[in-house]
Image (cartoon, rainbow, N blue to C red; front, side):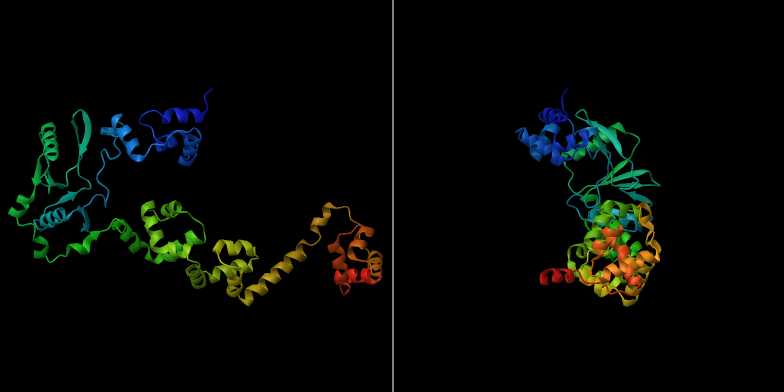
Length: 389
């Protein structure tokens, strides 16, 4: 029977396979697959080589292309992106045309909710999505700054395959005729004020506006409650990408900078730390949870919390004392028994020796001595006795 490692090595050597595709297929980490191939002395393909193989095999063409049937992601490409009145525009020409449509009181969609057309070119399946759709006129609009031969051919094929569909091209000449290039100045709109940056897009800004009041809780979710970014994204009903940007904007400095983290803990976590301290929370777990030093914890904890913790510990000790002894076959502690223990202790016998004689645990003997107001000797006392003798 062929092992999984042999299958991975065999398939990797076939054209079109790469480390990522094999990792998905066998549900193994890419690092492990790399190690398997290195131990087998297989030369690893670089990104360009893997890409060329996939193109030759037709794995990234037509319906197999990852962007097939998808509109361009916000921030993709070299164009600047803008958000205005609920529409996202790719480039200044689209933005100005959108402003002109608004001036003409036209109802339109831009990129979002615009129909996609499937077509074939050179026996390859592709999709085409116009920039605008004029709802009332049932017209699709394409804005073209650089109208290449491939673009013209694509439009011609789509028009042939969909003869009932109207697609209008707004190129530089058409925009000049309609005096659209200066519409931003006519309406006194500064385009740069509405630009969307790839790192600070509309979804990020809307998240910040919506959850500005939850900022401290979001930081605590990551720092204290140990939620990962995926869980935080699910909690606040947003995408991982937005939360990743929020991490860089709000959380990262507290996670990486010790001084910043200690300031944050002093400002926003004192009450919860004191509450946990009162409830006898393990101190090591407490410092680990908030990623602070024991010295800072001692500075934060109040005297009231310390006293309440001591009272709770004493109460638990009194309640639970002796319960664990039920599993042992221990003698009944009578008044005669207590007198014998006290006499032996006064005769300079240690608690360990007394425990062996009467079959008692050291803590039982300690309690008997404490109850009778006998001062418990330091272990060093017996060492001194041995030396002097």
